[in-house]
Image 1 (spheres, each protein chain N blue to C red):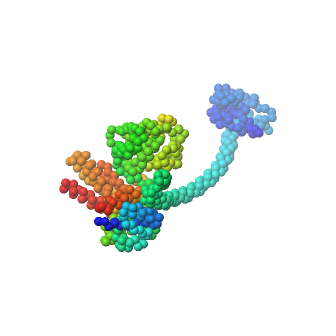
Image 2: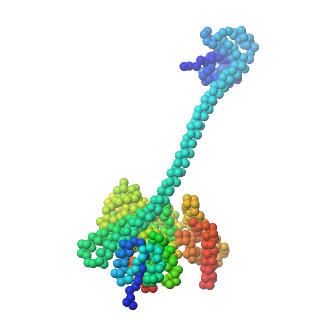
Image 3: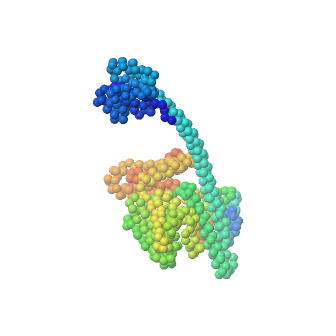
Length: 488
Length: 126
């Protein structure tokens, strides 16, 4: 329903009128019937025309009989006031110019205030809602925290469980394997060739079971974040070459060729040798297993900040939709003919875990019928980066388990003087020797990190007193080393 | 010297003891066995074996502790000890604890007979 409007006529068309028109013309409680001025070029008339409001020289043009009209006199002329004074009757009301504007403005203010109040009420409701939501989130968060704690407890239980289980499984396995081996080897009397064949099958499968147990434990340790890398500076090229060598007899017996593509320069990577060999064995082993003819390609390419290793083959390839499942647990896509070679379905998942622990990436590319290529990257050695990683890892572990950590930093005084006197290379090799010697004194999982004129080492689960006594040991070891060097 | 060399195995698994004993005897050793940590030291002192194979997961004592005790007892400290373990982390253990316990060598379970044979011979020929 349309709101009842106040009809007004404005007399006079000066600046004031213009301002009032601008204020009121879109106001929904006011209808401006017209603006009256004898001067048709007055500023208020022009403004009215622009806004589509009727204009006239005489106010009587706008008076209709049945309408309530309010006349606002802004002309400030005595004549008009006198005439309008006489005019006032039931339907027409003449307002004092000031009073009327104030009245309208007050009305407007009232409207605005009530609108504001309405908005405020709405806001109140919204803020109450927000508060409630907030409380909800806080409760949820607390629940999540609790769940998280429970989960990490479960995780711990899981890894304890797996470690125990693996021991418990391996013990009877040892008895079974040794018993069957002795029967096959004839320690308990002669056996027929057919019996021997079956006993060998039994042994192969105990071996397979042992591999599965080992892999399961490996993987569960990686997943629980309990795998500690024993990293040291290693030339990745020679590591890959050495690993390739171990496959040479298998390759030649299958009639497979091996093609090698290495960057010419040696490249040092800070890695856990055993673990990376495990990855390489896995990838090369898979390729050899599933390739009947053709070649295995192995490449190690220096890409600047990182090293890219790849193992490719000319096997039957992997379907594209299988590629992403490749690194999940218990996914097997090929059937090995030889039971001795049967996989555990865990090798690639473990490889992925190991590569990621080294902050590298691993993926596979394949074309069905043409072969598969596995690629993994390892970041190149950067002492600063390594130290940073060690500190963050240790801090994180320390926070989680509330254990202690210490950082040992040795700074060598007079490094630049020595460097000038002996040449950089000599000083660096000298430092490397010293670091190697000090390394002997450290717990085996810790590493001395050498950079320029300083050596760093992280000591996990070490109290200050222990760190200090270690420091003394290291210092005496260093001074002995220096004595020897001087004598030599 | 025609006298048989003596090996003492300490392990809590009777079945495994039985088969290992059989294997070692087939290699020409005289084999003694013991299944607990308790009394093990006394056995070593009495038998005076030429070599000891010691499981580290005994029910009543940590094998490494027992190894350490053997190595701290002057009359028997020179007897070589091979610690055997079904724990997967045996290599890590050998690095830190094994060195500390002064064990001479370590072998994972299940055994590879060839490897065990090699290890025993290496230690006995010293």
